[in-house]
Image (cartoon, helix red, strand yellow):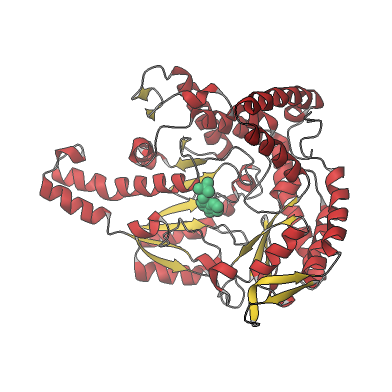
Length: 489
Ligand code: PLP
């Protein structure tokens, strides 16, 4: 399996894992057979489809196995060596190892391994920044050590200040994420938010426009990072802009952390040395368990450390253990080969789509994401996503800049290379994936509403296409098995 550490995926290990999973599923099935069956079926389904969801991957067997242990049963609110529960010595080890690997891997002065997910990592970071920039100075001014020492009137004033700060983030239709200050998410309710977008012609991030917006809006926080922007970001420039207006630069590298870990993004494209605070998920291109991390410069560390119980519940020790294992894998040299292959494969996919008439947002990619504008096929993102799924090609619909179809139907399909790269797909396979996608989309027609008008949701996929595409995908998938050697009885 390309990119996965050989020792972590040696056939002997898969053999041991096979009997382990057989036993585990038998134990689970003795209590609730439907869950055991669904677990078996999920493996079959994942093995049998082209997984192109840009935010998904396949964690290694050591990572998966680490999640299912008795660490799940331990409460450990607090920080390493300073817990509100007794008996946390082993959790301390787990958290310290996870944080050590994260610091070493990303070259970060400080790492916090507790966030349960990306949303939680961002929430932790936002409150850490508010504590450091607003609450701390206010307490100092009032001569108080903590908020409990404040009078009711002072506390009310501080609450008003905490709830009245400004945040500048990337717009959703340019590829930003809901947690970057948008109304449906708590971040949009906490902050006054304004957005920067991309250039209407090139669809690329326009740093001059970001700078102008920052000078006009004067945010406390500038958030960089994205979930659907197919290009690299110059974080040194973003920091320059933040410094000009006195803002804290927070980078959410949830999507591309694997490319940072694998040294594909270095220098100005590596967010960690430039951002005051960097957040990430651990389960996307980083290929770990579901979870989050916060990395920070020293000055923000004490505030980040307050994540639990400020905004997080008790840490999920079994997940921190799995993060430690995944981060250890990512520190091995072959992870760099894997990360480079993610980017190379995205190029192959983009070229394959372009040469077959596909229209790509920004005209291409230089990360792990390809954003295909499906309006050239006469389809909405919703229709394209559904037709592709019928043919076993798993993508997700996504807005394109200034999307005429809105955030629900959309005009694009987001495609990512991390998962199939883990399976060992290379240039030829990704070119074939492009061919299969174009075959599906060019054989799909928009359907009609019940009233007979044009529908944005229904579609008609020509007979035989789905089966033809599935058969050709199966050939590639069989050549690159998921968890080779893992056989369940
Ligand atoms: N940040 C970004 C940029 C993301 O793309 C995502 C998830 O899609 C998140 C945060 C949230 O991650 P999670 O689903 O783990 O909460």
